[in-house]
Length: 218
Image (cartoon, rainbow, N blue to C red; front, side, top):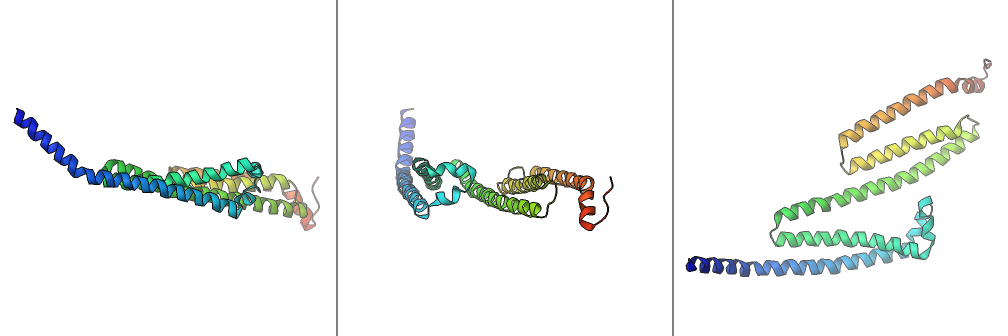
């Protein structure tokens, strides 16, 4: 019995000694990752200040608060913390691979791969916001210049369609319930299209006749 415990102890001790290089290598990787993540964070904060990112974001209604210096630095720090977190996760994943913790490494790898899709979705929403703002303003000016009735309602309708379009694109990019999103988007888009056709037929006949010089029925 004592020999069995002795042999077991020797076997565990040998495995632990053999594992020590991997353990130290993983710890060193995490230390390097922490330092590199901190460097990336500081770089992003400095770039945000140099590029004056607040001047771009302040054009949006939700970005008005960035005119305050404390709020502006807090936002830059938030961006830096996101980058810090992502870089640190990458190095933690390397450490888990070094420690041969494959299950945890696979789970963390999937989480890391989600961040690029999430960033792309945010970019789509940001670009979509700019497109919606520019397009609806241009549409409203054109409708008012042509004296088209219900210009505000038509602009709101177009804005709703564009928001739905870019929101669906962002959700699909994150690969969240892709089929359901496509079906729902198509249903909403078709429904709004039918509503627009009905409104055009019912409320637009008088305007069309007026523009073409026909007498308007009373």
